[in-house]
Image (cartoon, rainbow, N blue to C red; front, side, top):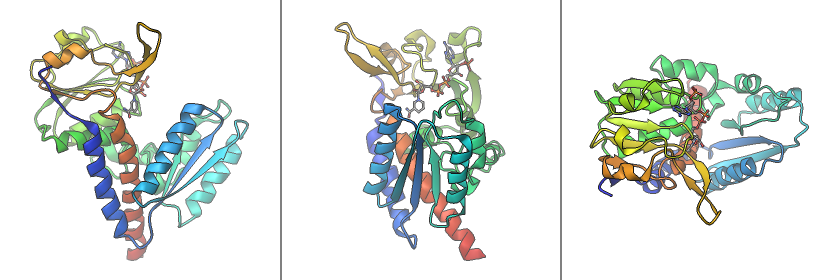
Length: 288
Ligand code: NDP
């Protein structure tokens, strides 16, 4: 391997330390409320991880675990209560939701000032207008990682593979706001390799193991692997891989690994967003 490894854990630790320091300057510890619906073990485990990390950096967190049969009206009523509660700074509804609940209705209902996932249309619009307030966690975490390792973004050609609302689209806006020249590729892109070879910064967020092979990468490029794919090895054991083939390390100048790359940034950024939300709310109350 010749590429420099951009490790996520130390950068996530730096982001968390910064969030903890900012939280300690507020009159009360920021309060994150996480709402989960149903029995999906993966969702339950993500929520436990987020809540535990919140406690580690001095934030308060409460988890509402609602039954699988919860109606949309019941969930919206809870969000309304949380929106009105001045002691709640951030609200996160863990996705996916059961089929009887429309995701869009829920994301629209969260007070944009408490929208720590950055999915409310107002926050999406502000991001694309170049005035980001609360931005989606994985893309914001990637920007923090690039900055931490001194990867130049302004003027760089950035190519993102994937156009989801969770990763690809908000990351395109953040890179554009940081003066990169941005291309967003997806499953209908013709000759993906020709597009990715243009990239100084290549971000793979497709959820396809080994999609990015060495010949698709410009020598010396920075490669950020967002993909998290569970695959079986020769012995039939499950393990996690990204979207980038391991041989890319021989071509790239710098790259993130899976695990140990972007993943830890996402939770750290969620807590940084919670502190940011509390700061904005505190400033608004102090002004009024
Ligand atoms: P989605 O499935 O919502 O989006 C995948 C995107 O990749 C789509 O835009 C799709 O194109 C595109 N795509 C799929 N196959 C190809 C292909 N062969 N060539 C080009 N483009 C392709 O996934 P998410 O954005 O939610 O997540 C992407 C990956 O990142 C997943 O592995 C997920 O687990 C991981 N992830 C990791 C996080 C972390 O913290 N590290 C956080 C969030 C996600 P089209 O739109 O045309 O269908």
